[in-house]
Image (cartoon, rainbow, N blue to C red; front, side):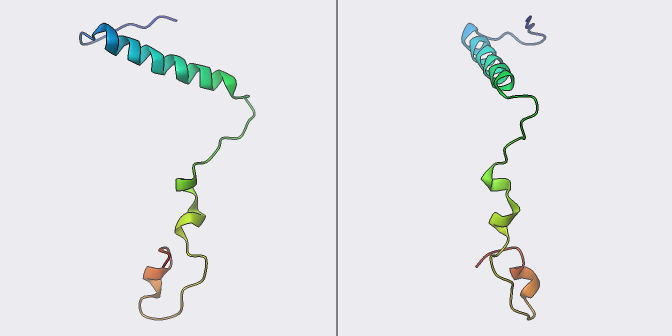
Length: 69
């Protein structure tokens, strides 16, 4: 693998940090089997946002549709 600095003048520490990130990402991609499903973070789960109960009918019901509480 060849990495070339196209623009700028990074310090050796900055270059080492960038290379560590690239190597870690490559190792993580290699460790994941090709057919494995991607995991979802809990913050992107729609059920976290939606209320666990249906809102009561009324003038502000549309506002309670997606925000619990």
